[in-house]
Image 1 (spheres, rainbow, N blue to C red):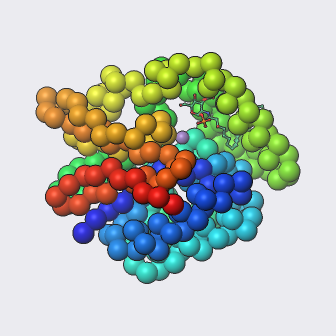
Image 2 (image 1 turned 180 degrees about the vertical axis):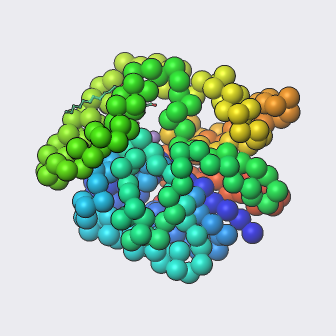
Length: 240
Ligand code: LP5
Ligand code: MN
């Protein structure tokens, strides 16, 4: 019995190794799991479900195979693929979850999320996030021709890279008080998230008890997953 979590694969045409690694992961590790949770940034960027590229169709079909074999797959949006919608969910068989979700796994209540909203010191990012999450702006963006959306997304990625190069590592990490507040708000002792690309299982105190913050790694040169079993919670890296 095991439930697997992954995030931050950043799949794109330019990085075929990650795609190969993900397809292998689906047919190997994930095929014997009770469920797979993808906690955002599956794709490098997502500009609308109508952007039907061979890569997107290949990934949808591979996830659908897993789901059809009896392994449910859940998805929480990341800051790169927050526009992934119902059409892609239907194609892939994935179930879209809200930004924060508590799941009970083998008796443990675990809060799961992408992790970007825990970075509350990064006020520039949060201001940017608030803007691009406005429904009217998203509707407007999605109505633009694909080539234009692609250009805007590339500008945003370039702007993000430039902004990140002058931000400190502390600003781009989670705020410790926000983590404790979130665990308190949801009355849980376990948190699983991605986004920061700093894989680790941190021990802390919340609700006057030991608590654990499990951070997934990005799929740069190897895969990263968290495996939850009735006995254990493990952070595992594996070659593509
Ligand atoms: O993604 P990453 O790891 O590089 O950095 C993130 C934060 N950056 C982002 C921006 C995304 O990378 C952009 C993704 C594009 C998605 C598809 C387009 C959908 C458009 C929808 C429109 C309605 O999330 C970064 C954080 C970092 O994580 C660590 O937490 O710091 O935040 C920023 O870089 C935000 C900047 O501080 C401020 C904004 C710069 C963007 C400038 C955009 C200009 C675009 C003009 C277009 C007309
Ligand atoms: Mn992210």
